[in-house]
Image (tube, rainbow, N blue to C red; front, top):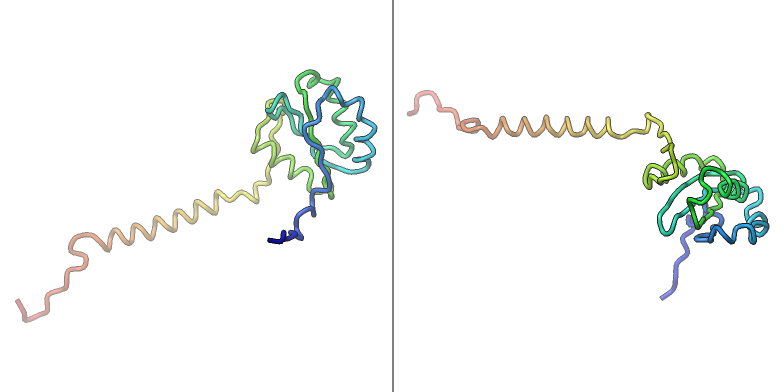
Length: 154
């Protein structure tokens, strides 16, 4: 059996590094810098196996390094970085990740544009379905299908 290549795979994601222990950061910082230089991405900080914090950055190494000394210092022990091809997708990706995973270390969940909210459309669809159901209920009431008596017959 041959493996098929998916031409869409790898269009957005250009590289990743997962589960790197925080104590090894300084040792491999220069290597990470070479791998991610000038490339935007999403990074994740973990405490054990639990996602602690998610962020986006134009400089992945620099952002992770700052988190070794800021308010997140000592609250995570592993990190992952995901290099993204285009900066324009970063904020949307971060927002989706934050809203789905709700990491403990993030205080902001990201905003979604209201014009893309599907709830209103769904409510309209439900309302239309309810109208059809009500019409069906009326039609099914006893006597609604009784044939009308003809004039002159008993």
